[in-house]
Image 1 (cartoon, rainbow, N blue to C red):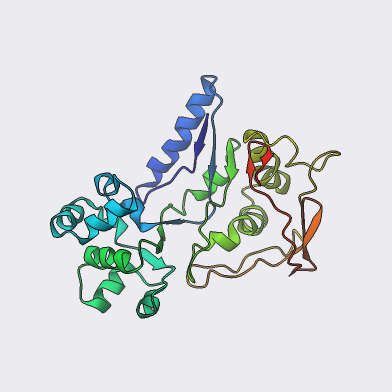
Image 2: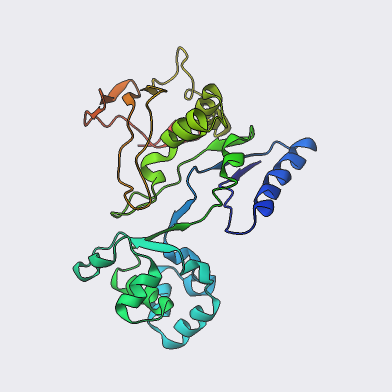
Length: 277
């Protein structure tokens, strides 16, 4: 069993660590349980994920109709949780009049527009044809280290690249492990961290020729300086490439050379060990 992306809410520290207790109890009983987690205390998704299921039952067309219907809007306002409207910022605006809102909290945008935050979100979803993304506080930073360092856990990015203010893990998910969880805070040893990002997920996902440096395997290689690798991606300024990563080789082709992108695109989507076309 693999439990994907244990999302820690803003609840208490004890409740977060209870999740790890569930994993350990299951493993003690002989179950094959693992999990993966991301490495920043921010979630990143589409704001439509927080809307009631009934409003989306019928696809995007049904949701757009619900957003335009006064009765449906009132019902959604009653059912949407406040954490979906607070401490979350929006990005990926396409309409020129909405660019001013990029990277701002929903509540701040609502103040700018003189609206209730829910109405602001609903109207912007209509104006942007459901295309905006949201980023917000999704994980308790005080317990994050326990998930990243747990022996049954793997590292995952799970990031959306859209917009000018994406989740900082879009650019920094793996370097932050090497710089902070390994080098600075010493929650992990370097070989353990590398395994969590390479061979462990490859083996768990059934990718038989990846994740290790071994004859016959695909040449996917990252060459970095363990003393200098780090990320400058932050909530306020997320779009920064990491430093200290000098070479990246994908399928035997160099895509990063001396820290510069070569423009080569040898990567392929994978599905249980098969390259997609």
